[in-house]
Length: 292
Image (tube, rainbow, N blue to C red; front, side, top):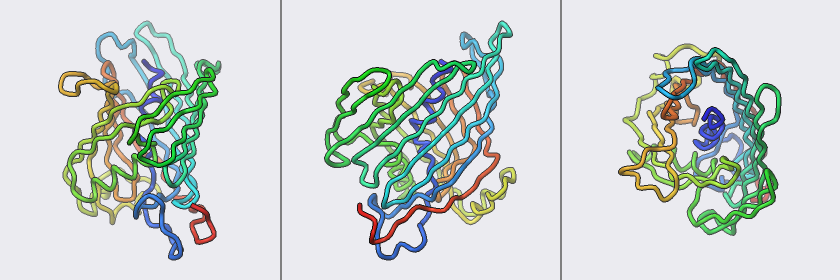
């Protein structure tokens, strides 16, 4: 169960991409609508919020570092490292170190991913693959390399992580309160597609960030609107009226895509993620000379 932490972070599209207009792009337009992702690095402090019976978790602390680079023309690379220290009910402590990197092209037709998980410095799991399709809404396939060579089919209209993040922000901007989409992020050994349902709360006007704990460089969020968002992840094909989600993710989503006040509920325990540092990075090239 603890190993699923990487799954939830990747699946949500933490895909938490900074979504602000990229300067100097008058001669080229982003391939996926009008939203361009602003590269950034965010560090979150992870703490245990609650542990329910049977979880086997009595204490947890850790840190997650997420980084996005690239541009709306050349595609985006996401890297993440999530390290947690977990103590069980018997007092035994272990350290889990999850690392992932992925690249998604601007047209959402190609998605490459690689992830590894270490437990107490020993590699316990590794996944690597390449997903492709003729168009963003068409059927596709995944060529897995690790943990074993295997081909996995992808149905039509399955979102990749960056594509999902863009669509979620677009839904929030137009005032939608519910956004549903199937999501493939390479988690669960690269073989699973999640059915997601996002609930988008009432918009907070600019200035809401000033009410939150101060974080270096986060003042850039002061003039932006934001939305409380909660996403439930279900096994594909499950009856959402009766089935419990595999996990749920909640966060405050700013109009530039930066997220604060993370909350991840796995059912038998839940954790919080507080933004500690935020750094905006230089965007990649996005001009007429870049092929899309």
